[in-house]
Amino acid sequence: MKITNSEYARRRRNLMALMEPNSIAIIPSAREVLRGRDTEYPFRQDSDFYYLSGFKEPDAVLVLVPNRGHGEFVVFCRERDPAMELWHGRCAGPDGVCAQFGADDAFPISDIDDILPGLIEGRDRVYYSMGRSTRFDRQIMEWVNTIRSKESSGAVPPGEFTDLDHMLHDLRLVKSAAEQKLMRRAGEITATAHRHIMRFCEPGMFEYQLEGELHHQFALGGARYPAYCSIVGSGRNACTLHYVENGAKMRDGDLVLVDAGCEFEYYAADVTRTFPVNGRFKPEQRAIYDLVLAAHDAAIAQIRAGNHWNQPHDASVRIITAGLVELGLLEGDVDELIVAEAYRDFYMHRVGHWLGLDVHDVGDYRVGSEWRQLEAGMVMTVEPGIYIAPDNQAVARKWRGIGVRIEDDVLVTAKGCDILTEGVPRKADEIEALMAA
Image (cartoon, rainbow, N blue to C red; front, side, top):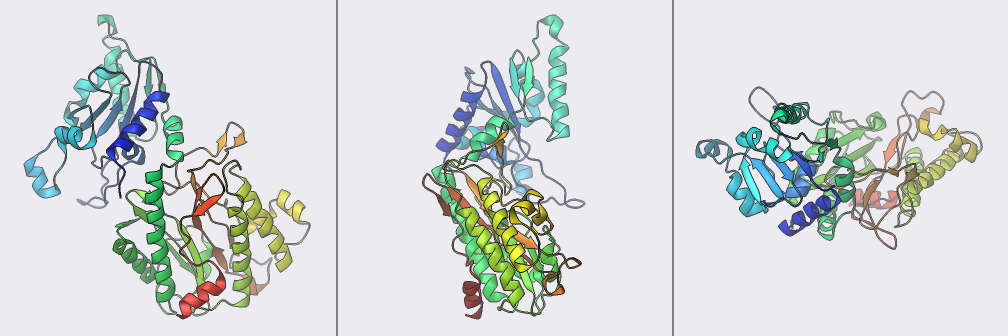
């Protein structure tokens, strides 16, 4: 289950079709990053670079030159070196990039200073995402200055630079059938892991033990890495939105909020479930949980092609605000409280984000001044939450320290939507039944 070379080629053609005549696009790979004195973090390719090539090695540059006679898809990469491969494993080399990844032309990365300025020279437009890498920005400017230094000899510097992100990220926003299959599988693996830790959890365990079980289940399902730092926050820790210490002992009577998803073939899942450590919700916990679930369901009901991005969020805000009034956590008219954003003391984030090669995936949420219209093939999260700070003196003590979030991954379809993470129970009764079993 992988993206084929023909799909990567189609992606490159789609991007080049949007580029101006006599232009060039330059996309550098990710770089290896040191973790300690002489060890690196696990390498993960830049998502834009991977989207256009499927090539997973560092120290590479992808170049697209529409209508170039010698080939439009050009790659600079590491040369093969048997001595280095003995230590670090085989690399493709220029010949391998052409044979395995469909490059029209490939050169050693060590030759880039000699070759790439010649490809840039005379172009009316250079597409490049400035500001991501200070090092590569500087290298681009050095190549341009090299061309400028030869103007008296007839060299022609590029006319202008244009940010590549907008065009490329709009292409990434709508997922192909193959991408949808990979994301569905990521959702299935993640759902299995969340069900497992609900059965595994018991008072006295540490949060990191649940984290370890999650990652083990990801690997058993064929996903070696999580898509992001897993959040396992019990008790008051659930009220810290991006809590990743995962070091506390889980207490009888507390809730635990688990926000974790695997990465499968570079595509992310992102799921949150909140459940009682001992398997039974207290009345106050159940009241908040059921309110968040109602907001979650109301948001999903608004997801279909033709609706705009903000409709699910608006639906969740109305349900949560009305529910907080009913529980006595807010006072006043619901419409006036929404206008005043009084709910933000308890629900301070938006209902979701795009999902894909990145867990917070690319793509504009507005087009001009209007919310983007949803299209079939887009994938988004739905994750309403209520977080009642432990030191919130404005509410009764029984509510303090309760944090609940419920999150699923949702594919927009022509007639509605498809929940890719349906396999994890959401209803409180279902969770209690699973934990009791």
